[in-house]
Amino acid sequence: MRNKCLIALLAIVSVMCAGMFFVGCNQPEGPEKENFTGIVFNAQTLDYDGEEHTIEATGLPEGATVEYINAGPFVNAGEYEITIKVTKENYNDYTKTAKLKINKIDFPSSIVFEDRKVMYTGEEKSILIEGDLPEGTSVEYIDNKDTEVGKYEAKAILTNPNYNTKILTATLTIYNIVDMAKAVIDEVLERPDPWSFMPEAFATQNLAVDSSPVLDFTNTVSVANINKKHMGEQMYVLWEGVVNMGEMLEKFDIVYAAGEAIATAYQAFINSNPDNYAEWSGSAAGFNVKIVLNDKQTQMLVGNNLFSIELFADTENNINKGRIDIASGGVLNYEMKDDYLKFNVALTIKGVMSMKQIEFVRNEDVVTGYFYEYLGLESVAVKTSAVISFNEEFAIVMSAKRDATKDLIIDGYEEVYSATTGQLLGCKVLESIGIDEYETYWVNIYDVSGISSVKAVENGSILPNKNSHDVYINGLTTVFEPKYNTKMGGLVKTSRHFDIEMKTVYYVQEVVDGDKIKYEVIETQIPMLFIQRENVADFGDEAKEMNPTAFLTNPTLPNAKISVVEADFESLKEILDLIKEELTYQELVNHIGQKNPFFSTVS
Image (cartoon, rainbow, N blue to C red; front, side):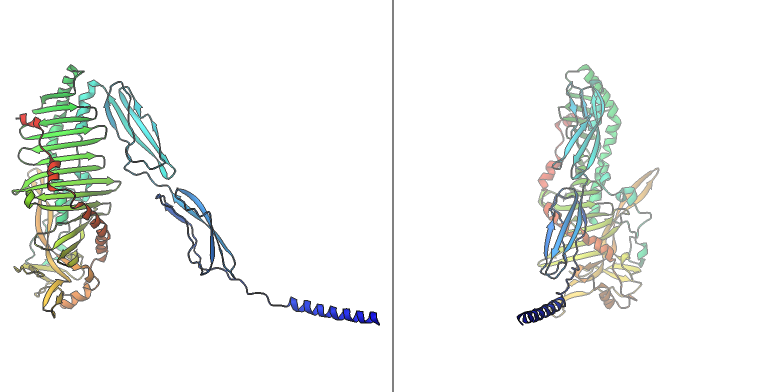
């Protein structure tokens, strides 16, 4: 009986266990895990800039944990694989690897390896790299030094983990005493070329208009007939300075022609004084000449009763300097090096003294520069300061100078030109009076849609906020109406949203004089549209509202050109603010300098 009971109990337990097992096997599983979505972790490629870089994931859901593996940050050029692992409760783990590539860059163009000419002394001569080398740069020189007379083609190989290998070549010339005079004369006669820094479109012959420009707008003129090769006042002041330098450099032609005769006379002196030739005074080709040599610099003075020229060649630093003084009036002083030119010009124009300094710096295809001008004597001199920026697309001049008919204070006046055609794309002016500040665009009238013809007649007005011309468009007999801001119940007109005014411009015209071609500058005025920056978006509606019979549809502005004008305004304005007080009247006088006392003996 006991055994039967035990068997029965075991059977019951077995059934219960089986039931429990059965129930356990059919329990529902936990919630299915989700996959991450929206995570962005992509490869990146960038150029070396000396800064730290990595790749960071974005689009991570709230509460997720991210682990970066081999994330850097990385500074040096190379390829780096960065891995992330993202985890979150109820999500499947997310792992991804992305590549960060930092490219090598080119060495700065300011690093140069330049030709050098030196006289034989029995000591070793060499050429060395000039410029600031990036940290970690190694330089390997090949054939860059020698002792004996001859020409040597030298190489400098620059390597750096973050820069593309650069190979520079230069010629080391060691000349002997019998060739010395020609070498000296060649060095000092290196001639500056200011036009090489200007866009080619602004060369005088390229800027010249093909036909006579329209100068009279008192009768209706088709806007299609307005010649587009005009310079505004800012560009003209710069361009005129370069022209002045070019005209004064023509005196160099006479000295170049006499160069061989001067070298012959000086060489004869050297041959007679092989141990004492560091200073020579004599005459050649009708000029009084003086040559002074020292270890680092050559000086040559050439003059007659018409002009005097003082030249320097710094062979160690590859810098040339010069000063040209013309007896009839005018002084030019310059300093030049590869990709650099600074010059001063002093002239009396219509009885007013004009002193200018222009500085150009070329960095690959970009030219930047600074311009200063003083008109008049120190106590009453009118000063202009300007910033210059040229590249393959645009030529920009920004200054604090504008036409004298306006009484507003100019904080920045920018003109933007096409560097390929020389055409003015537009202007922007930042000006103020009292607490009021205005940002104004000037737009070529032929770039405004809906205006086909224009007429402008002087009305003699000298009132503020009143156009000095009555302007008519599209053949109408009613005056083009601007829209005003008003105050005091609309009775006082304070400023105009837009208007068409006559603007001073300059044309260059070719003139045939016998068998010679000359170029004349024509100063005139053409109609241009100005518009306040805050009113650009509403111009079409407002212009048609104020002139309903003049437009069939709303006129439009050349917004692409306005965007180009706007693009660099702030950055150039910052530079202008820094430099505009940098050069004083007296400093400019000092730069121009005085005639060398040697020329007091020249007759």
